[in-house]
Amino acid sequence: MSFNFHEPMTAYELLAIVISIVALAIPGIQWIWKNWICKANIEFLPSGQVTIYFNRSGSYLSFGGVYKAKNKSATVTSVSSSVIRKSDKAVLDLRWSSFSSPVFRKIAGTYETSFETAHPFMVKKDDLSPVFVEFEVKEQDVVGKELIQTYYKTAEIVNRFPDISIAEAEKQLRCTSEYSDSFTKINDLFFWQPGKYQMTIRTEFNSQKETNIFEFDLSDFESKQLRCNIDSLLTWNLVLHFTGNMPNMNVIRKDFIEVP
Image 1 (cartoon, rainbow, N blue to C red):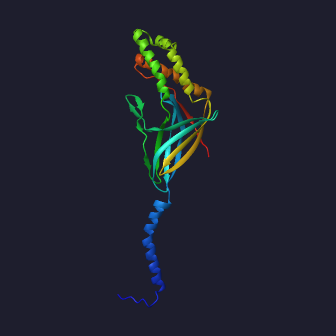
Image 2: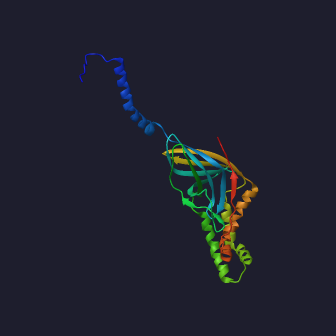
Image 3: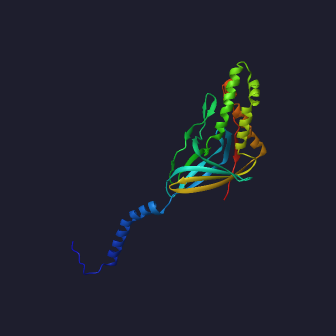
């Protein structure tokens, strides 16, 4: 085949060259768009309920929903939360602790669910990834420290009176200075007062952040239900000693709404 560079190209030849160049450039353009221009975007679709706790781990909560990744897959590296008590602007800072399974299993007549330590996870493009996160307080476990003295006093009462009943043992424990001091200190740490709360969920993914803000409220009765857990915590070892079972702790489940 011979080429004559002295003759101008026809329109068809010029069009063929342009098409060839574009065809060769398309993969490169797509790679640049996918890796440099197009960014992942995550949308959180909440379940609509938050579970509120107060126990030996302190004041914390859990919530569930699904993440949806747009444009391309995304890796969620962290989920944190802060709760503002609107009455006095007190703030509770939380970090993710564990994932709970949305599936309950029935074992020996009892329904159980499984937990796993919170860890980064991937949300595939245009797919839904369910997640149920339980948080923990970022601060040191101050509630757990306050329980130690009452545990010592429980052992002392049980060893001194081996035939004592659970009702009498609880009565004696509640009359001690250890119980009174620990109750006062734990009560001061109690966060869930009656009123309105603002909950902020921060999701970190692909070096980006997504923030969702929700609101919920607690009634006076619901707050008192959680506060009753203080006595259950302080008498924990007594109940465990006499019954072999851990005491039931009150939890509150509340609907929440998203703030635009």
